[in-house]
Amino acid sequence: MAVPGTPALTDERWGRLAPHLPPQKPRTGRPAHDHRRLLGGLLWVMRAGAAWREAPAEFGPWQTLYGRYTLWQGDGTWARILGVLLADAPQATATS
Image (tube, rainbow, N blue to C red):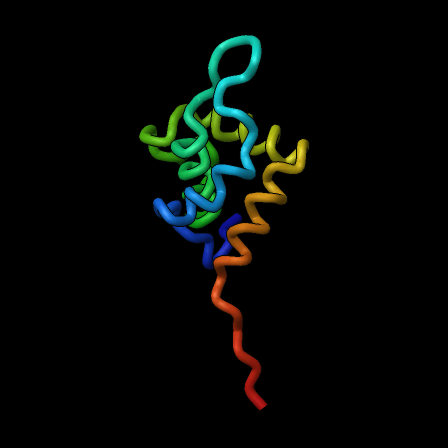
């Protein structure tokens, strides 16, 4: 499913999104895959309307992308990400 207008992950946008993400390195276990790289992949999938399996390898394994999306969807992180992205979206002007 394509989400028209999904923005790319610029340095400026990343700076606003990073504080809303969980810690990169959990207290226990292995370190998580790089949040910025995976978030770029999530936004690519949304922008392209592609299947998870079609995500370019530069964003990491598609299984990791999908897993991170479902994790963030379930714990509310994705809603915070969308809040920041929607705040960036140009507001449509009403015409009379």
